[in-house]
Image (tube, rainbow, N blue to C red; front, side, top):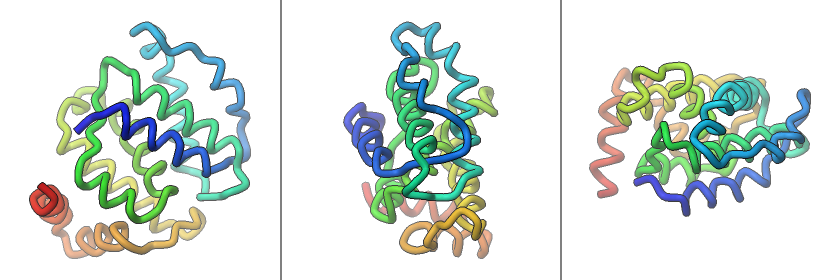
Length: 173
């Protein structure tokens, strides 16, 4: 289920997250209208996703919010990639706003680093969840492990993550 409504909602949720380190304040001026604009922006989106995935959740980090806003804007309009906001996403969104932003960064990072696999929604979701788990487990990232993230970690530890993700999709239909 890919909707502009959900991406717009995520952009608003991302506004409560903030960042530091690099200067992403100029990203708001990047034009994203034509297909070529989105292709040209891919390297910057990848940079933003890497930044988000290497910095802790921090309410004082304004660069993090700028990176997320740009990334969400790109996700909302890119004609080359589809980001499925399904039941797994829905359950994660109930955990915390910070987790939603990290998950979206995982999705961007995965599709841009694995363009040959970007059309396979299940592959994108599974690998994005793996990245989210790794991010969440790092104590330097300040993630409170609870809710759905805790369930995903447990499923991964028990080597049944794919089955767990499939069950989420089955139970929320």
